[in-house]
Image (cartoon, rainbow, N blue to C red; front, side, top):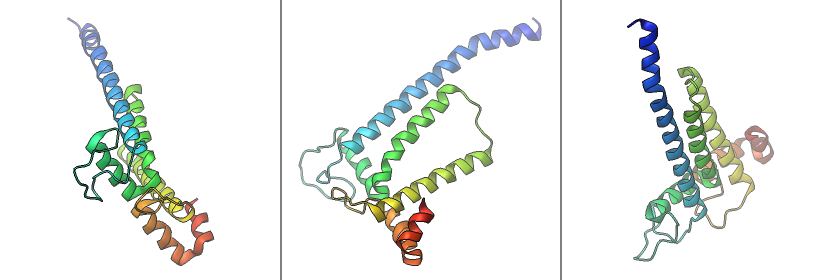
Length: 165
């Protein structure tokens, strides 16, 4: 058997399976994204979770106790910016499904830093400009309070808003 036929047989055997694994990973990540979104949308401050000890009351969150914990921690740390996490998980699933080559390490580091910067700036802006009657922390969570109020102390409200935009 020559090398061309061996390569073709290898591809004929593995390519459909790899495509199937990519599709399965996409559906798993899409489902996880929907679960995260439903947990965030059905958040109730009365649910027993990380920041509140509850009695033996029923959990209102549609995703159960795990969803209540996820939503509570996400809103506590990031505020309304927590809605970016289901989007990020869905985008990761799309990239896996498309089968694009992974970028090199430096590009991945820059993209990760960009995402963290987007979370920090959106949390800071939410803290400075929005009210959150349903959340335990500010609209930007703990991260937003640190970033928003920390920069506001030195730059003022207008300077901080311009910098974070």
